Length: 479
Image (cartoon, rainbow, N blue to C red; front, side, top):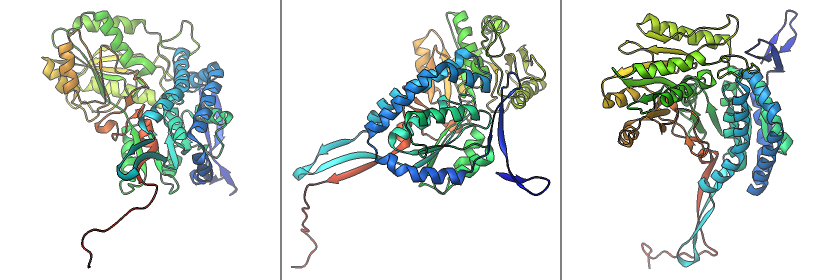
């Protein structure tokens, strides 16, 4: 993207990144050009695809070792750009490392090479081919782990990648790409595109890409879905958000249930697509649980990554996001919601929010939206069937969890809940990378990621093969 200054000279625009916890600028780079990056990746793809899978896997294992050696430095950069606590960003970098072995295992299990004997020495073969050049559009909440979850399996399969990180976390994106290159992935095989929404749109519109792997909001995902509606030749994998329900019913340990509710709703300052947004409880029996949750909320430390003692929650990503979450909280109050724990900003000029807990039972016109912050809405229902119905009362379908001591209730919940992740006595978030990750409804397009990422990084090729040609036509010919 370019503009002209006051004397008519061409100038290149830049993307700036700042530490949301301090406001300090930490990174600046010129905005990139999508077509240029795609052209470079197309030039490098064929040689990478021609490498053996063992060569590509070994390169990814070197990448894991390089990241392992930079764990502290990488963690501090993520904290500086997102405001997340150090304990959480260390976990994210460890997930980046662990993704390699998981992806290798998934590659052989999900996209194997198979041969089966047929008649007359014929063989039926199954192999997989890479798509070509894939665009990866990353989010800000897990700026290393989530795009890495697309990029590693894409590279193992033999694709080239053009990666555009979120404009809110570009420094982490650049650092991640540098680690791939240091490991031996050619620079023309993984490309970094610096930019904002406009560059993301340009990348998605490039004729030279063979698909888009996207993690982000449902709104942006729908726009991509519409954009590719007439392009069945391009793969599209969407990881979108959720309005996730957490049902607590006949829980024998209210302290544990409250801790799971807090973990579900408020980890990462509520900026997880799997975060619990709605707490569904039995009407008339909710008070003891809510008091336990309030006790924990009152003790939660909200602060910068380097605070002592360590905070449970950092800030949300920026002041605009903090304003939007606060506006959602106030809007629900204005519509009749009853605050149990008031959300407020701890500093006027920084995006630190305290957790909000609000009863919305019977309140009309609550938007079915993903409020991307530490806000949990309480809904009281009369019976368990109503709890399942309320859990499904959303256009999303990413994650759902039941906290209960009854296996029978869990069986009913699992059968009735509509979500791609359904947990029992576990939080709604923290999904395993060794399982598929994705949702239904507005939460995705039925291309789950994590362990199933291999499925959308290569396409199957079925072959019937014989050592020599044998054919006769035994009917329908003249004498």
